[in-house]
Image (cartoon, rainbow, N blue to C red; front, side, top):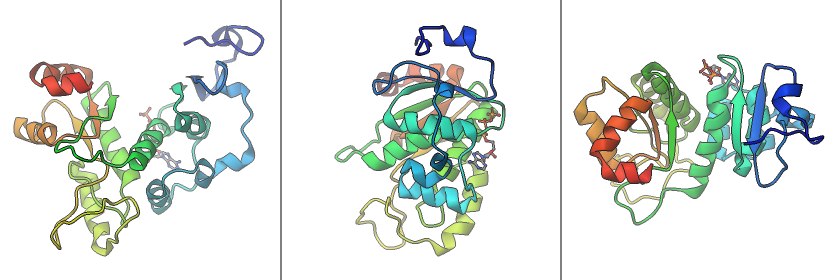
Length: 236
Ligand SMILES: Nc1ncnc2c1ncn2[C@@H]1O[C@H](COP(=O)(O)OP(=O)(O)OP(=O)(O)O)[C@@H](O)[C@H]1O
């Protein structure tokens, strides 16, 4: 990706290092530093981004009233399908900056029909086991609110939280139409799972056999499972 501004200067040489930067490559706009674009003030509310109603519901329920600067800068471009490189401090909200556009797209596309196993649709690589689990928990939180179904492979922490919330569960707009027997949970529209070292082989196999829409993994562990799973290797 080239980072050339509108005057032909190398963006990395000329721009001062700022707290949040988003570099992108997109068919819709010329290559340039996003920091040089002035975003309208109205962008500061989630509703400005036309995110899927399930995501807006979860964000509001989690009291995330407005996007952080890195989310505000990256969401309009990521939702258009641009490739982005985002740089921001620790704890500045980078996970949702890339996670919300992924979930938005998958919720809109819905679960592919006529497939017994979910095909992998998004891969997130995290440098450590802890970060992979944290990303999984975070994305599950963004996907699930009390009015939506609960993902099956959530980490323990968000599962407990959602079990409490699930008591007054209603049918959400994003829930799949289903002919499930009463009382049985329908499969989630989007399934998220982290596969990391230390997980039991049985649980890992169960996740991979059933298929997952968003896989979060550490590079080393992903390499190991790809050696044994040709279908997954092809999907990746
Ligand atoms: N828009 C928001 N409003 C309020 N809280 C938010 C918002 N976005 C993220 N958070 C919260 O901020 C915290 C940090 O977010 P996150 O982990 O995504 O940061 P990060 O930039 O990815 O951090 P790191 O670099 O350490 O991985 C999390 O607890 C998250 O729930």
